[in-house]
Length: 479
Image (cartoon, helix red, strand yellow):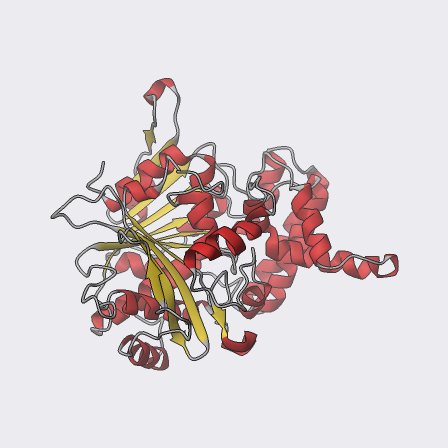
């Protein structure tokens, strides 16, 4: 496996064999509920870099049978898995802190992390930006270091938080898909080196930013077909998408990221602010206003400069702002995370504040943001790892067409047979009478789910087929 350099493997060796770091707080670095159904804590994954994790154990566990664990990775980059994935999408409680009927906890234990460091409750000492991960591979090393600690015996109890024999599934959304494939390869290398006692059973990539080029090339044609842009808008979108292709071929990745931001602005202007996460909707005016306010549009003489900054900031915050816009509680989602949730956890340092998006994390990864990870998917498939790809029908930013296009670039020897396989219709509660909810195509260790009536956040938009899908992926005993 060519992902990790010898230096990265040496760092893993150092940190995976080190003693679990204990924060300078009144209690240990980990805490949890009295019944053991939840645990959370910090791991120092590098000098100055502290990653927060939260583990839920399923009440549906079947005794004497291996029980799967799902590691959920959020996108952004810089959006919080502990916040969004947990309370907005698949955790046991929803954003109103009420029980979620469609929680994935019924099919697996759930592990949420704030990744990369600097996201959510994770932090770097002194807000030192040089301690942030600057590549997907560095973020993967940090996550693998975290897994090393969680698979080791917890201090004093003699038990392991994650059992070596139970299957681990890395499930990701959006930019998290890039973290998922790089982390899976890093974890496999650590497993083979005897550093990590995990059983990596599969990777699932939900509406993932695996090939930025194929994603942006799909935007204009899709918006034209659904009447959100006309011929002129299609031409402008395609022109900028082709500019991105040229920059990527020249390996000018930072400039490609800037052009991607320009393209998003063009799409917004030509479509009258289509929502990037569900093309049947408009961009949230509330989210746009919040982004403008945060960026300080205060004086008329600075309006032009401020609007440019707002466009940049909105591109970075669009993902987290869309999720936060679904919260109706006074104070918003940041208010919930920094009061009720913080009070429950008790171990969050006083100088750490949960934010809906870390711009510092986004900026630190600017050099990798537009890089594809198709080769990493290929490598996992060729190693025999189970790979699932799922795509919401109504997504724009990682549109199904773009995802299908990068799948066709795989060099995996099973691709031709996979492509020729027929799709199977999938139904949910009520069966055929309710209508088709999804399609599935599968060959050997590759599965592809088309999830209907869903945009970028599949578990939110159409939770029933999403829950059935994760049960199928994990082969959960609780069916």
